[in-house]
Amino acid sequence: MKKFCIGIDIAKKTFDATAIFVESIDSLNEVGYRQFENCPSGFRALVSWAKKLCKQCNGKLSEDGLFCMETTGGYDRQICMYLHDKGQNVWRESALQIHRSSGFRRGKNDKADSRNISEYAAKHQDKLVLFSPDPTVIMELKEIVNYRATMVERRKEAKTRLSEKKFTTVLGKSQTERVINKMSESEIKTLDEIIEKCNQEIERIINSDEDLKRNYLHMTSINGLGLVNAACIIAYSSNFKKITTPNKMSCYAGAHTFYDESGTSVHKKDPSKNVCCKMIKNNLRMAARSAIIYNREIKAYADRLEKKGKPYSIVLNNVINKLLHITYSLVKNDCDYEYNHELLRKLKTVEPVLKTEPSLEAAL
Image: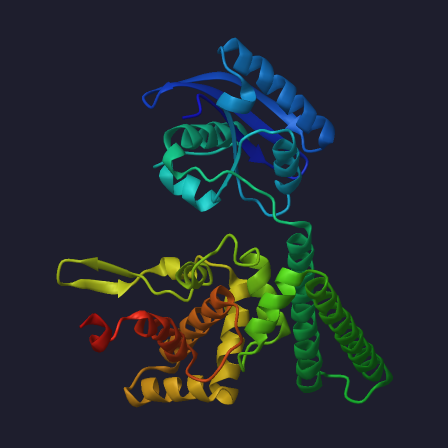
């Protein structure tokens, strides 16, 4: 158990840090608070400040210290990398998890938030997962996948704006209207070129690493999974190293359904289903729609569900989970997809066992 916890509330330009000394779960003593610049010089000042406070508490920062912060997108990545490189213990926790664990609160400010984070780190060390940076190739893949998604959204907005403009214009076929339409079409063409370059960069990154390339080829052997779907899963699962099971990935993508139940009168879907990675969810939904059309095994599965009267949304959700289970099985067994894959995998694991069993004649 770490005895010296530093809670950090990250902002764009600065971050607030509160240090507490943990004598026991019921005895948390604040020993310092300070605000730093969110830059390398501020990171160095933070470590120097924390070392002095930890030494006053008869501890060693690298052994007894724990830095905890919320996952705030890109603002916390640099400090996490810096602290990790300096051999410090770093914990990135969900902001929603910390917020809901703090109970009812009136008002908020950065200092109080940093205190709340440090208290969470002290009281919930049984949930501790130390930060470990992704390999460079995974970080590059994640960046280009996110950038491509942004460009796709911009293209969608441009196409919608162009199509709506044709119906809502009051200028008719004026010179101004023609200029606007021409610029919109040029914008869409430019975005198409950018997205194509993103696809090429994704392929280059995947081909530069043997493990990524092998898993990518296994995944895309499934009719329905393409370049972007596979790259998104690989990037956010850290090439299946961090999200190691299909059920965890399903939960992360919002494809796993949870329920609120109480007595005999309350039975409804839990709204936490929407607390997920929307990018993976959207990509998996597109993959599921494609698989229903082009993959005969998935199509037969979807048809069976429809005959049972299942709504299309449930069919799509079940198809996503089936695709994830097949994907993780392919990666685990290092093989490509084949029709009735799950059944064949079970038969191949049973067959060697049967061959090794002694015959009745040999036993006699």
